[in-house]
Length: 229
Ligand SMILES: C[S@@+](CC[C@H](N)C(=O)[O-])C[C@H]1O[C@@H](n2cnc3c(N)ncnc32)[C@H](O)[C@@H]1O
Image 1 (cartoon, helix red, strand yellow):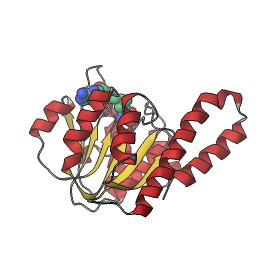
Image 2 (cartoon, helix red, strand yellow; image 1 turned 120 degrees about the vertical axis):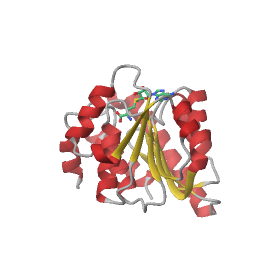
Image 3 (cartoon, helix red, strand yellow; image 1 turned 45 degrees about the vertical axis):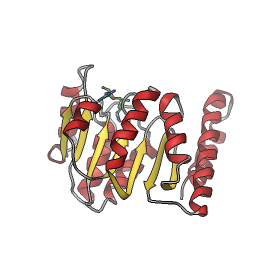
């Protein structure tokens, strides 16, 4: 599946995930090797779930465990959206809080996407509880890492960590990293470059209404290439 096909599938599914982020989740799931589950914390109406499950379908075919408390009555829409995307059989919805789901969950994870509460203490707890289950070489992705608690947790626990390599920022707000036992000096420099790219994007967002569209487009392309591998 290419970017335009993914965009077409997501066209009627509301959510905050942009095209580049959608493709990054799809690719992260597609390139999983089957060493663990794919877990999502925070599904809402299923936009990110669909990206992960379509990637898994074109890749290892492992289930996507989609955790959300669905307190704002999103579960019916979620189910309908994943059914229409043709991936319902690959999705294992868990209608519970992240903490409740964690007490019942005991499997290795190869890819986790964290996009639930964005308050610092909640994001930190999601990270500290779930990421130890991620296998070495597995991937952690977080959304909204340009603001609130998700920003701080990503900077402390991914960009500033000695246990993540290939760290990159995907505009508009996603951070991705590969969990490892230890990093090299080269990996550290890559994490620092990716953090700079993220900070530049944050600054760009603040001033974007004063900038011409072509400058914004060029900025996004540059940030993607600097923040990438
Ligand atoms: C930003 S939305 C997720 C958006 C989704 N990933 C997408 O692509 O559209 C955040 C979701 O997290 C859920 N949530 C917030 N705190 C949670 C918690 N402690 N446990 C489980 N779900 C939670 C909310 O119910 C909401 O649906």
